[in-house]
Length: 288
Image (cartoon, rainbow, N blue to C red; front, side, top):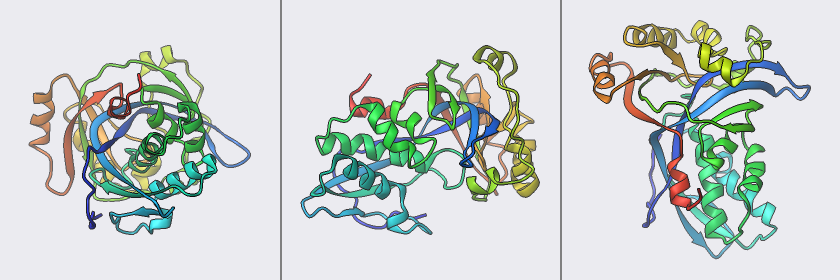
């Protein structure tokens, strides 16, 4: 990934990563979308987005993202979807993404970028759409987009859009990113994916901590992820986020997480981050 191009001045808009503290696949709709139960929690690891308004109605990505054409980038698609919903085709913008989050890592970077684009341009273009309306627009771009728009840690059901605000503990995490990019579509279309997990209540999750139904599929297809999980499990219970490839463990203190990071094999990327129940996008956008 790269960020060639001129970064606009001004205060950036944050697009934080998320972790799935568990992920159960409980069914499949007729349209092919999977029904899930999961818990989303943010972490203090973000992409930064910059926006520069244009007067010529063009929607442009001024940074570059390896392997992703401009018209396919979620930030451009989000800007277009918002403008279409506003029915004001004179609006334009340059969008620059300072990309830090790994692609195909199960951390929601693309969805978070789309959400930040919707929230930021809603203000910058003076549209005054409600968060619920932005979430509806975002859902058409990706099932994870609404949680980033609302900006709170959440128990999620449906395809991920039915959100209940929760306040799990905010531990320190060691996040390990194996050197592979995993397609969500590949994992959710796998015939061996469990699609009939028992529906649980929030109380049941707190008692059992759940699991990630995508993990066995990913580990069988991507041995590096299985190895990373095994390595990280030496230090604390480890789990994969989303459809992978990132894996994580929770620690009571930053120092404990840092000690584990110091032992990380060089072939993997790792970072120590804080779990947070409120997205930094909320403060930047000025909503509670």
